Amino acid sequence: MNTTSTEPARKRRLTKEQLLQLITGLVLVLIVVLFASTVVKRHLFAKQMLEDTIPRYERLLGIERSADNMQSLNKSSAQLLNTYAYPATKEASQIGTDIQQKLRSAFAGQQLSIQSSQVLQEEEDAALMAVPVELRIEGDVQSLRNALAILSEQRPVIQLRSINIQKSRKMNDNSPILLTIQAKFFAWRERP
Image (cartoon, rainbow, N blue to C red; front, side):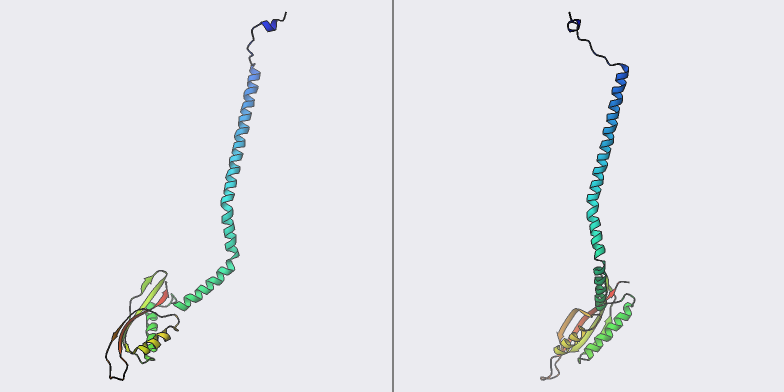
């Protein structure tokens, strides 16, 4: 008779050596899993960094490729600035005097009588400074139009900020109506 089938099932016990091998195997598996998860995390981090960095790098390459275009645009903007503004190296009082001379030349050449002119204090306006000059003039409308047309050709540009025109006196019935004009002009100056 077979005694093994009738005997109650014995519990299998692991020997110390087998238990030690099992624990060592589990520790090794745990180490491999931790190492693999670290590698995967670093890989995902590197992938994300590349995804974030590539567009920036491409933008930098685009900027580098357009350097010549930027330099030509910079030169043209400097030329425009020279057309519209006095350099920062020139004092505001010198600019005011220069504006007064140009205004006197334009208005006197059109038979307008300059009653007074005054250079006002320089004003800040964003990246530029405005050097204002106030004039009081007498003359007729056509002479005023002609003088303003002449001023539009001046470089750096002298701009009209405000104007107040009042009817003055009339010498006789055949003469044009004289106007009293109070105007404020200004020119830009680069910020020092």
